[in-house]
Length: 215
Image 1 (tube, helix red, strand yellow):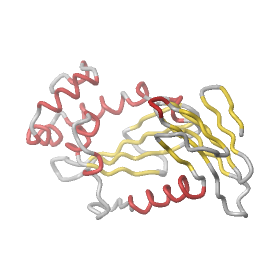
Image 2 (cartoon, rainbow, N blue to C red):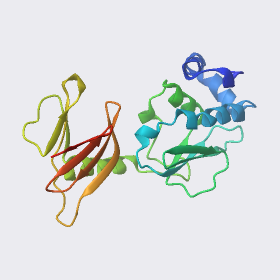
Image 3 (cartoon, one colour):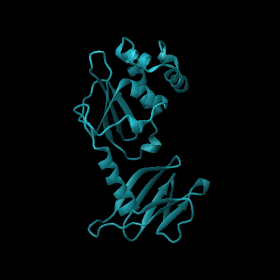
Image 4 (cartoon, one colour):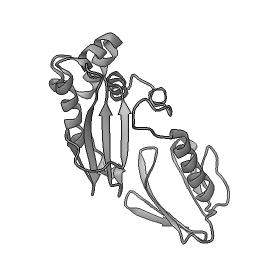
């Protein structure tokens, strides 16, 4: 992987897949490390999908381990107003930190690693994140309070529903606490389509690729 800057994503994936774990570890601990990581993060803005980001604003710190001295490098990715900017020198407090080993990072990008096996709730660094708790909270909000359902058949009478491709259906039947006036979700992606969903206990409003559907 001596000429990483000249390869496209498909070639990069093939190179990572063909390399052994020892070879990847050696590269992440060697002289090519900075060049490879710089090239990867410099491509983030061109790969960024503003149409999927919605109104998301975030500061993400990627802490990439695997240095020869046991340390890590931190790259800052800022998503704001439909744009993506990257810096090897973090300047803002993060809204999210991701700590991952150098080899795992390469395999994650190349699609040759299982991300669910790369992250752990046991703190290996000072950056800890309770993944199961966050996922459970999101489940309770989306499928409980908001009443989102993803079915392989027509769900019948619902405040809002729409037929997706391959015979699937997406529906919404909110059960919000009385004190809540309503909720809004931006960037809900189903089958590569981004939705904006606004709901209260009386109505659901969904915007999809430029058109709006009310129920």
